Length: 113
Image 1 (cartoon, rainbow, N blue to C red):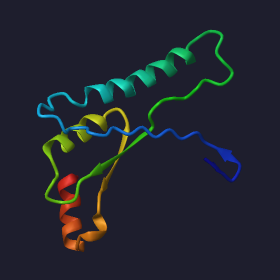
Image 2 (image 1 turned 30 degrees about the vertical axis):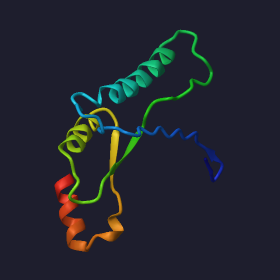
Image 3 (image 1 turned 120 degrees about the horizontal axis):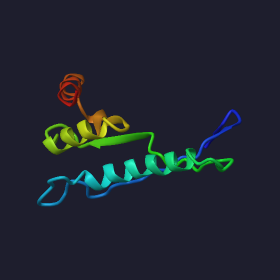
């Protein structure tokens, strides 16, 4: 992505099927492990005495977390966002929010908060 002469590399990682298993106990572990590994990889490169001129930055800087429409907010979603927010910025997005009334949207946002 380039805007006003500033170039930025954007990597999008999708996690299809997250939370769709019968047993979702600790299903967030692989995702959290991946995020922590990226931070560790960057730190290892940064603390070298003879560093590379440009360290590849594969750290995860943010997570856009899509939440199903109202009535489908799972405890799994809340728990995962709680855990994930300790290591990365989480932006919850309510899917199909444009189909909700203002009251429904406000109530659902409050539940997510």
